[in-house]
Image (tube, rainbow, N blue to C red; front, top):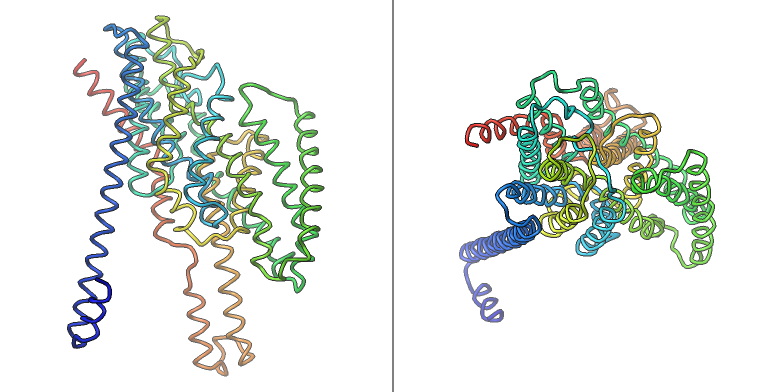
Length: 509
């Protein structure tokens, strides 16, 4: 068939060959589109199958009574929210590793799914706050029925908003989504005075703090690596000196990060213990990495790619640890309101803190993994590849920035979003790379004539080269504007959806 096609194309006039080529391209594009639609429909089918399994499990778990049908509905909504967290939020942990080719997409999905579920089940905690970030006091609700429907509205609105953001290709904070849902439902059910606006102001501050801090720290580390290693004539010698230090910093930061955020519900060490853990991890990593690099340094070529390869294993470890910590923290966004509803129905009271049943935690953990495996690749691709090109050095800076920024913010008591930090770090390394690249090209254009572009003796060729360098964009502005817009409207959009859902429920119940 291939031989026949080639003979036909070769013997055809040029006009017909052009038409044949266009037709073949259309056929290929149609086949790709059909494949994407089929895969999307298949994934949706698996997602619905998971929700059906949750419904059956919750129905028999609660006995199927009329009173407990509310728990069954809440379990479905919680599972739907967990799937959307997996589809959107988890991408920030593994996206840079995938974009830099340190991990394949399949490998990243498997690692993230395992460690997300492990973090949720091992360190998800037994007791959680029923209302995210203590925004609304449980005492503000007139009775448990209103509280139950308010929590249901908040959970469903957050899930719908994150689902929409994933469809649009915008990584958003699931924490902010559930916060918006709680605000909208809380105001609808208990009035505007029920909201703690001081807490809300701190959350609003994190919209700016998180991405800026993450971007600055990531850019600072990238600048250091460029000038201390990559721009040196002896790159391997510089790598032997500095890579063990950088990896040791990452190991120290992740050890403290994992204890502070990933294990905070099962173990809360004092500051001295945290310092000892960080120092021990730094020393162990420095010795281990230094020994390994010294062993292989003789076989490495003196070029940038060889230096980048030294960050492969640290990147894989970072993706796993970030996923574990994320699972232990953000599972509460999926099952926190669900746990509150379960407690209100079974105990007959509204409480500020409740015991988290294992089956509720399992729904959140499995739901996050299912959502990641079925719908996560889209956001992973955007974070890892679409915003800016990431090699392993840049991806390392993003991962390192994520852990350090959370530690700094937690120490200072600043509310930050892990999503905003990671994406801000990607933009930080992208803009730094754009600035350095364009500045270097501009200087090279000027050096030929020894004059600045706006001086009379600068040649037209150099001016054109300089102008082209100034226009070169290494960060895609379209994704930048989409993501910023999604961040800004996440809380109000989720709040409005929650308000509409609550009023709809209140009207028809």
